[in-house]
Image 1 (cartoon, rainbow, N blue to C red):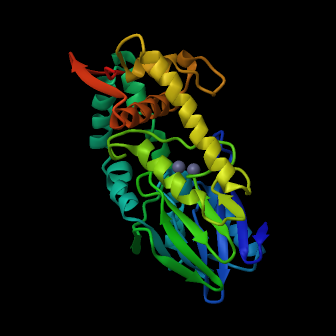
Image 2 (tube, rainbow, N blue to C red; image 1 turned 90 degrees about the vertical axis):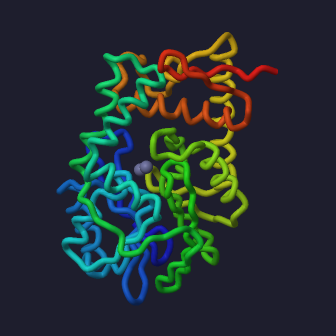
Length: 329
Ligand SMILES: [Zn+2]
Ligand SMILES: [Zn+2]
């Protein structure tokens, strides 16, 4: 589908996943095209991408550069397989490059650390093991590829008549990137801003100390940019970026009130708070998928750590478990 002249959206299927598909964008230039995000590494996704390129009379060799907004499997998974088929250059943020080895190559050390981390936040022994291993199935959907070019934010990528500004938007992932085209007023928002889903912002071993604070700051930065159309990595393109940013910030403010309400009566570990919060996933806590539970716990910690930075909450450790409580007035 041609979204605006020279920008095509390819919907790449993500099997057995509520997101349904990833939006990959092809930006056409006179000396090669830029592809933004790739899809999971499945035959189905690869053939879909190949078929969509062919429909435009193109093949993988016509892609001169692939920009990966962040290294989650649905965005980065197919990168290595494309690289095996064409001499395409790869680019992503430095912090995303730093995650590849620990997540996709030597992952057992990180897995063990995640287990200790979850237990320290009150996850009971019988639940900790499945939560610790919950991300391992995603490994088969990634073929590792290293970037040819590392980005930091602030660069401009010129493709034909498009001048794409690289904007570093940490939070959902520490090196998440958006692309902004100022003259055409387009924002390629990756997973940073989606039209109806609130992206997961988790506190974990590789998130930095205040990922939700980083995320909200990165949202505020984009709020006043002149944007006519947002091209997100999931769901559909949309307008009114400012309204969407305000709605996401309101969602986090509501969450804040709920979480502070839950610890008003006394200290609790993050796992207990996560269990008591309402989650918009249509099922009871005990029946949630381990990965959903893990995201829920880590998202709760991201909120608590933001409140701690704002001095509204403090934490202490007792018998190896971290508790959060309201700061004294
Ligand atoms: Zn993501
Ligand atoms: Zn995604």
